[in-house]
Length: 86
Image (cartoon, rainbow, N blue to C red; front, side):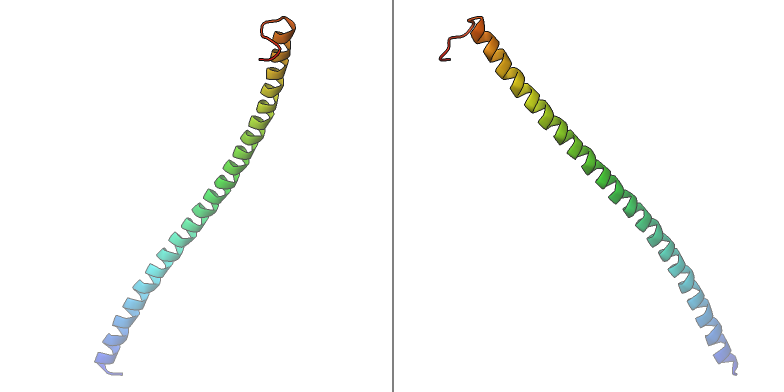
């Protein structure tokens, strides 16, 4: 093998070695980003569950307020604070 061919091979080995290192860094970064994305997806699911729970609480409270409103109206009519037609 000639000296030129040897230097070309050495050059190519160096370039491919650097490319391999770069691919390794890119793969490591991709793994890190994938992990972070999965964590974010889990947090979004948890937030949706919490929001659903808050909606359920709101519906329950709205029902209780409606019941209290009806009871207060009935009490006001009984003690004649308001007229029957109002």
